[in-house]
Length: 295
Image 1 (tube, rainbow, N blue to C red):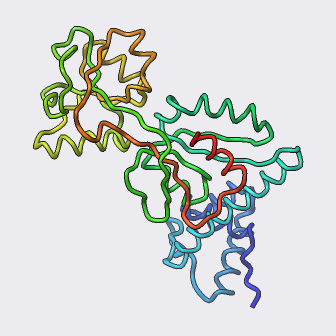
Image 2 (image 1 turned 180 degrees about the vertical axis):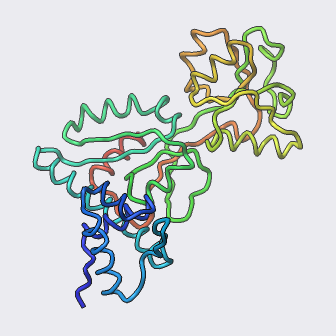
Image 3 (image 1 turned 60 degrees about the horizontal axis):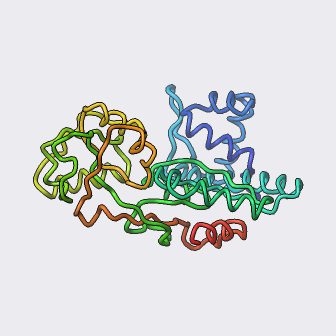
């Protein structure tokens, strides 16, 4: 049986699933609603099962449809990537790597590494996006990235981790604060302070919450910021204290009235790791980038 499951139909199904409407999917893909609906119906009839449950409110995936969309997204990402790679090769490029990295990697190691990589391998194109460590494994599993750099101690299912670089978390306080200049301390000793934290969902925020919980106290979060720089500026303004990687906030420490206090907690010494999808052989360009990251 020749099942009418081609890339165009797959795009219609994925779009309808994301938007909850075949009409909206048609609009996104610039396809008539009748044509979009006919593609889905033809596939359902050929397979002998329903992809969507239809109602006056739109469409909802059946269990079979959920599997189809999950696998279909991977296929579409691969096909779009193939198209980009072929165009790159037509231009004389020798490879294309999509790197998803956490903020610490962006600030601490990637500028110098990527600059050297670009000078030694100018025909390899590298696209870099910043994401939280907790988001990157899913990007790898869904085929939206080839390589990740994460702050994770243990590999999620389907992911392989390799040590890449280390950094150190410190307590950042306003200059003149009672804790400034004190001996190294454990986070538990600072939990009476108001904290300026990163937004929820980051590996660092999760680490702080877990450590405070284990000590039997709650982390008193006064504000949540989206960048290390914003956190430092709030601390410098006397609004609280923070825990940040020492190596990532050098410019702020040099220009703002801040002080740092070493932390004695074992988790303050972090190892960031290269993340890859298990069972998938990296492309030569990806292997070249990994070599540069590990030097």
